[in-house]
Image (cartoon, rainbow over all chains, first blue to last red; front, side, top):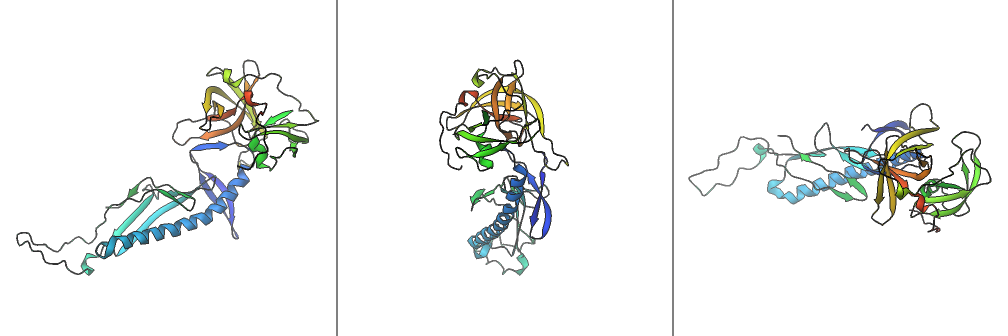
Length: 156
Length: 172
């Protein structure tokens, strides 16, 4: 089902916002077009809040990981769409999952691991430059924003 | 006497008994005044009265709950087509009666399937094709994104037209 293009003025710029269809009941009274434009404009503000909240949540997650598991770089990638009712929807990017998180480790820059006591199986330095563990972020509602997180994928 | 949906009046800030509204006839011609005499938010119904009559009106009502499944029905109503370049004043769509439905607050409603019910059609009469009687009134539709319930239209029952639970409604 194709989205609906809604003309919205943001500051001094006139843009068109694609409102994606979402499942559910809808009253069929008149005046929808003007209300959709108002909803889209309000959704812009909430989308900015959503971006900030995702960044904060990611930062807290990194803190919880502790010093040993803390990655050297984190990339969070997600798309944002709007519904006609002004709901902010976290959407997939280029066919990927709703939220793509990449944890990057620069192994060569880390101190060597402590020597093992097991002489039969000594630890050899790994040659893998990057490790990208999988994890999931649970869907939830924050500050009235509907966050849809259908899947989380990481690149391998 | 004119019947429409409560939410139609809500959209224009007229959910107050005695509120004056303008009625725009589908067939064209000047709008005429009407006043709100009954409100039933629970059933999403409202009754207006006017000294001006529409060029045509329904003479016979059919009990919504008595409609047989797959009964052929027709809806004609005002509609909004966004960015079509030209505005369609009204259109007609056909459909089939699908049966009753009950909301979780025990509020009965009717359900039909049709592919042409658009924003602006709330309050449009649901006409049974066989005898042209009014079998209900359009309230809304279900937007399906997965194919289930596609084309579903929610219909107010004629059994509730008396607005027996008339209240001074609070905003939703």
